[in-house]
Image (cartoon, rainbow, N blue to C red; front, side, top):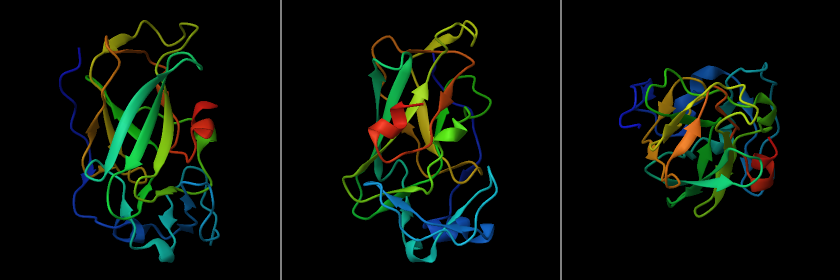
Length: 199
């Protein structure tokens, strides 16, 4: 059973999106939780490249454990899936970057994301609003190997492929834990449940 988590790279000093990504040199729009888009794309980023947030969003803080509650709910369909819901509990807007950094005992790296689920722009949450991601825990056809059952999972908040930022969140899991195999995959953070569960 999971009891501890490996150490990983972490940004400790960045406070705003601008401070965290100013050196990356690429700008993009930001989607709100309602699905609308903010600024237009100033220049396209190559596939898999980090993106920075447009100037008008410089003062947005990053969503992380101190201002965001994350819950995990098993899905009936697709099978072997968890729905993660990240809710902004702070007093100002925050931005969900990339995808959940999911960790369990013995993990050497965060699981990959369904690249096809990448949204056109990061999701911005107003206070009280939620963003969503789904987790494919194990393969239904056994192709992911035997796997292991874990009773503890932790979610970190990715910072553009350079580790995680702020506080992690320990998930409250279903009784008996969750079974994870080598096919463990997550979606990017998305602004609707429907978008998160189609992958």
